[in-house]
Image 1 (cartoon, one colour):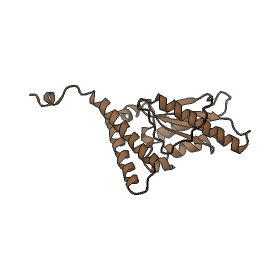
Image 2: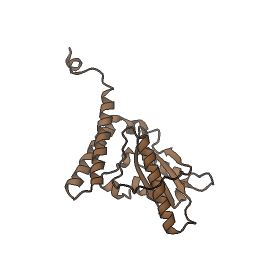
Image 3: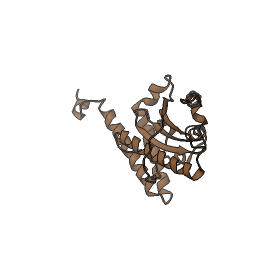
Length: 210
């Protein structure tokens, strides 16, 4: 949707503490959050934050989107950690990038009520680093936020995503990571369904009472 793309573009054009547009950073880590503030995906880039995030959330689909690991509809907010690594030798920069991604991954898993995110590829364990300043923004405009946040809409999307992911797994020799992602998606669906049920107190006796 054009309004969401406009919000993403505005966020990535916003300046960091040194006045440089966030999306202009070649190196960086990003995390996506859903409408409940739950972290759902972590990634790294050495091709540019703007380009990588745009590929995930706009028309240029990534493998994660194509395989139904990540549903762009679920992404309500973005957080980025720009990294200044251009002065480092390439091997050192890549190592630092991996360490930064692992650190962010551990951070967001701890933030998650379910203790899961949807990354299908296990990250190499590394030493944690002190993360640089992060920048975050909700990317869903007020005009459509209530509709997109509605749990029934999201339940339908999650069920569809799970069905698509299960189909992908059934059609190929799937990795353990992809199967773990299917379980994570199922946990997220169950949690949302349980929370939604709380909006309807009472039981079968109440529903059938005259």
